[in-house]
Length: 337
Image (cartoon, rainbow, N blue to C red; front, top):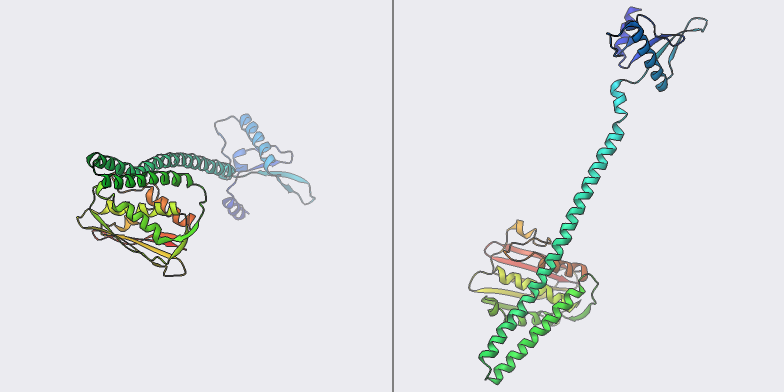
């Protein structure tokens, strides 16, 4: 019997108290309880009172085991409850919920802060992009005004300059319309893409000297290719690509090439814009379309991200970096369906 008792005792890890049939603890108390931490410095009466209270608490968790004699009469009761660690584990779901709620709260606050910062950056970026867009026609108009003052007695020169100034004024109106169309679905019209590209190239050719760059714009355009585009927004994309190419060229014999052909896969138009500028590393090329990313000392990094959105979201096409190499230049592909 002692062997079985010892075997049973060693397998029990939860508190147990042996009481009589009336639920009173059996004396000596230390011998008739397991895994119960009781202050042994208390008097016998205090120990009995404490065990009686503990038994009442155990009854709330589980009904006691009843020990009966051969006639079925209850002679003793065994009270038990969960171990201390199980009791603490009861609170784990609540603690986990609190931790998860805290993570959600911190995540929400962080996300809200990031979103507010992004919105603020986008507004500032749009303002700087507007200033960047307005810079070319305004600087050109200042140059034309200076030419007018210098050539005021030459009627032919004055007439030619006034036409160029008129083109700059028209461009300012185009820029205003572009920003008005951001955020709304533009109306697409089927046009000859070569005419749109040529219009942008011819505008920049006469103004590159005013931008302080010696760059040649070469183009091989196919007048038979048409696509459904928003002319003003598509011109914006080509302008951004040309401006980026101009700013990337640091050599004296800078060349920007624009070629057109049919898309390699499926129907549509492919416009290839390449330059012999300083090129990019793979790391830079993988991030240039991210809003706010820029390698320039000036600028806000919205030009290419806006261009990609115009091509992909508004036209259903693709804008990608096809090739780039440090010191050799970069090639962009603009694919239109």
